[in-house]
Structure formats: C-alpha cells, structure tokens
Amino acid sequence: MKNPLDMTGRRVLVTGASSGIGQATAILLAELGCQVVLVARSEDRLQATRALMPGGGHTIKAFDLSKVETIESWLKEVTTSTGPLNGLVHSAGIHRTTPIRFEKPSVDDPLWRINYHASVALLIAFRKPANRAQSASVVLVSSIVGLIGQPGISAYCASKGALIAYARAAALELARERIRVNCVAPGHVHSALSAAAESKLTEAQVKAIEDGHPLGLGKPEDVANAITFLLAETGRWITGTTLVVDGGYTAH
Ligand SMILES: NC(=O)c1ccc[n+]([C@@H]2O[C@H](COP(=O)([O-])OP(=O)(O)OC[C@H]3O[C@@H](n4cnc5c(N)ncnc54)[C@H](OP(=O)(O)O)[C@@H]3O)[C@@H](O)[C@H]2O)c1
Image (cartoon, rainbow, N blue to C red):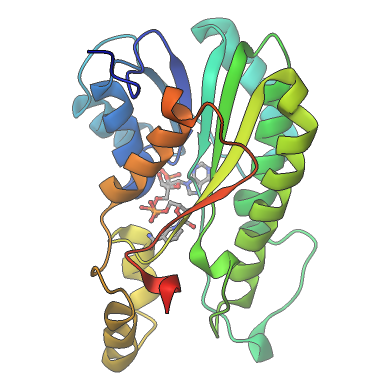
C-alpha cells in the first residue's frame, strides 16, 4: 500500500534541529526516508540529533540564523553541497518574557531577527530555482500565541502572528511557482524553550497553562507529526494556512 507520508527521495532543511520540535521533526523525517539538512548553532548538539536518526545522506550545517543578511549566500553554499531542497522547516526560535512596561523597542531585536526576519530570508533564498525542487513545501513554526493573546510576552506573540500573516501572503504569491507555504501553531510543548518560559511563572500560572490544554501538554513529536503532514504528499492541496496543534487549548 502506498504511504502518503513517505518522504523517500526528498531532502528537507530543518532549522532548530538540535532541540525540541526541530529535533523531533528531523528524526521523524529520517524515519520516513527523507534526507535531512540539520541547522542550529551548536554542531555538537546537531551531531547528537544525527545519532538518533536512521538512514544516510543527512547533513549537518551549523549556522547562526540571526545573521539574517548572510542567509541567502549561506543557503546557496548549502544547496551547492547537498543538492536542491524539497522542503524547508523553520523551527529555530527564541522566547522572551517581558511585560510591556519593561520592553525596550529596537529595530534590531534578536527575537525578531530569529523568529521573523530569518524566516523571510530563508524563504527568499529557498525560492530561488537553484536551491529547491520544482515542487516544494515550506513550514514555519508559529504558535497559538500568534492567534490569541497572552500577557507578558507581547513581542513574542507579535513575532509569531507576523509569521502567520507572512505565510498566507507568500502562499498566494508563490503558488504559481509550486511552492506551498504553511504554518503550524503549537500550544505548550515540553522543550528547553518552554522550560525556560515556565521558570518565569508561578506554580499557579504553570498549572493554569496545563489545565487549559484539555489533552494535556504536548510533546515535540506531536508537532513534528503535523509538520510532516504538511511537507509530505498528504499536504499537497494545502497552502496559506495554519495548522493548530494545541491539545484543544484554543477550543475554549
Ligand atoms: N515549546 C513550546 O511550547 C512552543 C510552543 C509554540 C511554539 N513554539 C515554537 O517552536 C519552535 C521550536 O521551539 P522548541 O520548543 O523546540 O525550542 P528549543 O527546544 O529551545 O529549540 C530551539 C532551537 O532553535 C535553535 N536556535 C536558537 N537560536 C538560533 C540561532 N540564532 N540560529 C540557529 N538556530 C537557533 C536552537 O539551537 P542552538 O541553540 O544550537 O542554536 C534549537 O535547536 C520555536 O520557534 C518556538 O517559538 C514552541
């Protein structure tokens, strides 16, 4: 029987592949036969992810995505060595808890660099015909807080909401080039990022987040499943949308 999630013969670049959602995505894609290009800053942690992945042909490319201005030339170098990409997953991201009264707006905010501007630069570079296959899929990792508000993290919420709007517009513009662009919007998922965010909250606040997820908190694998669904043949008629993966949080 044909498996519509089969990724054999495809090559996908995954940012944030050293941890959490990106790591789970890299492992699942490898299990489905995909060749994965693993990206994050720490080469050692990428090697650790690579050791968990079956199959061959995976490539490690340690890179700091906050160097947004160099992403285009860097991706050209990457695909010159790996060959063109069938997919791109931007999972690298950072979180910041800062109440509005303490926010210091800056046009060079590192949070915006990695969460939003790196996404835009990656998509611009990915779109170039030399860098990707004829038919290709992009998944940007947003968040449910890009759809609903949460106090104390307004800059993070805004950066994730911007991704959703960007994916919709890019999907319309790039459909004729056979590039699909979608987001996933996870709820609270166990990871290094969420553990750091939780450390700024009271026990009662953490409990309220847990209680808000009718199916309980998520695992990185839950989001990896949704990302893979959008990348694979299963997602071939899906573009410009955001798949919410939140254990029912936004159903309230
Ligand atoms: N966990 C959640 O509850 C949750 C919920 C909704 C949305 N999200 C989103 O999901 C995505 C993944 O989150 P996660 O929970 O998996 O976080 P994580 O475990 O902290 O992983 C973040 C990844 O991003 C990489 N990274 C960070 N800064 C980078 C940079 N400048 N250049 C290259 N790579 C960089 C990190 O690797 P290095 O440190 O080695 O660079 C790491 O691989 C993020 O965009 C996050 O906003 C998470």
